[in-house]
Structures are given as structure tokens and as C-alpha cells.
Image (cartoon, rainbow over all chains, first blue to last red; front, side, top):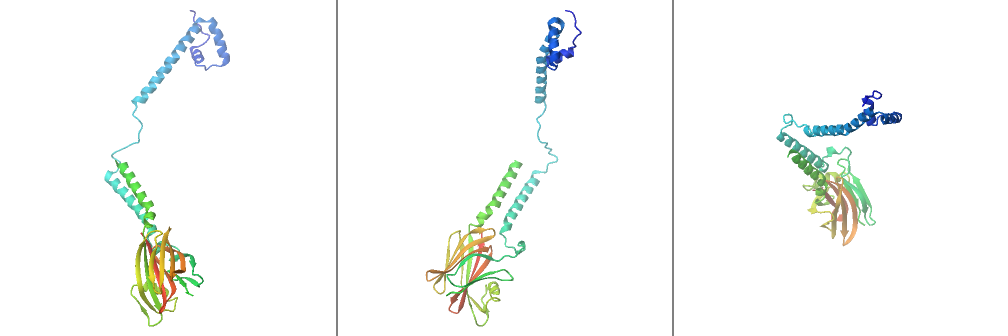
Length: 148
Length: 149
């Protein structure tokens, strides 16, 4: 078999990997019909390709299995002690509980705008006159009606 | 273990937080003071000074006497009744909470017929005074205090 220097091994490798232009592809196919050396090289590269891919896959799999799984960093030396965390959680719970109680207290200091002690939605005196009063000091609501 | 404890505490806290209004609506402590207001030598019974201090500047009465006092633990929609002088009856029905206020329906019946009724939103732990029904000497004042628990 006469050695051929028309096409380099790199070109043949790219040909196998379909990385050449269509024109170069057609020329090399025509050349292989006449050149046994290049045909042999092309066959060799074509056999190498699956072997190489299998090798890469095996290496990748080995990397995956040998490396430890990625997990959140847990450093026992920097983590606060369990008791401290427990107290912090209880404190948070107590704070939430205290906030929950706030709306039910009747501390006048919480009300920025003074409100009457009672808001009268409706009143029916069956013909009698009625008067609704709110006192100045404590906004106490008085409903006064005159019996007929 | 630690995360489980944290989640449990947080969950219980949230339950407490969101169940407060429900618990608060369960019982409405309602206290009624029936006061007779009249003219004459100044006198105020013990226990009603705070109410009288609100009334006195507005009306001409000088004598204030407690005729009756009653505390009732009412649930939503359940009426509380109190007999008043002059064959009258006071009917109070808590209708729920709206914010920090208790919704009350209040009615006065005289000889079996309603003569007065109102719907009020009473601030929790506050009171409203209804006045006007005639008594033998003067008028009646009905001081109604509500607390939601």
C-alpha cells in the first residue's frame, strides 16, 4: 500500500466527524475511490470514534461516582448549640404570641385617633325622638331617647 | 431533630396567631348596670362614678342610684335578658366581632312590644349608655359593657 500525503490525518479525522465542507467531503470520497491508504486511514478513524466516545463516557461516569455528592456545608464548630437555637425559637414563638394579643388590648395609647366607645349603626325608637352623644373626654357614647 | 422542633414551634405559633379572633368571639362577657337618675340632693352610688362622670355634664340629673346589675356570658347570637322597672325587658344579642369591636343588637320591650332597638359596634372592654326610659323618679340609664374573650 503506497503512502498518501494528499490528505492529513487531521483532515481525515474531521471528515469522520462530519466537520468538513460538502465540497471537501465530495473530493475526499472521490479520492478514497482511488487511494487505498486514505481509505484505510478513514476506516481506522471511524473505528476509533465509538471507542473514544465510550472511553469518555466511562471517564465521566467514574468522575461522578468517585466525587462526594454536593450538599450544604455544615460546620459543627460554627453552628450554635441546640439549646441556644431552641431558646431562640421559643423567643420567636413568644414574640408572635405577643403580637397576636396586641389587637385585643384596650390600651388607649395604641389608638392614634380617638374613637367613640360605640358606633351606632342603626336605631329605631318607634316614633320617639333620639339623640346620640359622644362625650368629649373619653368618647363615651350615649344614646338617649324619649318615650312617648 | 432541630428542624422538626423549629417547624413544630412555628406551626403552633401560627395556629395561636390565627385562632385568636375565633377564640375571642366565643364568649362575650356583657355587664349591664341599671341606674336610676333623678333630681335632688347630689348622690352617686359606689361603682358608677366613672359612668356618672360622663353623664352628669350632659344632663340635669344629680342623683344616681344603681337599681340592678347583671353580668352575662353570651355566645354569638344568644340573647341575654334583663327585667327593667316599668314592665320593660332589655334584650341584648352579640352578633360577632368586627375588628376590635363587638356588634350588639340591643332592644327594649315595654309590655311585650319593642319601644327601642339599636345596632351598635362596641369597642372591646368599653361601654355604651342608653338613657331615656322613664322611671318612678327620673329616668333609667342602662350602661352596657362588653368584653370579648
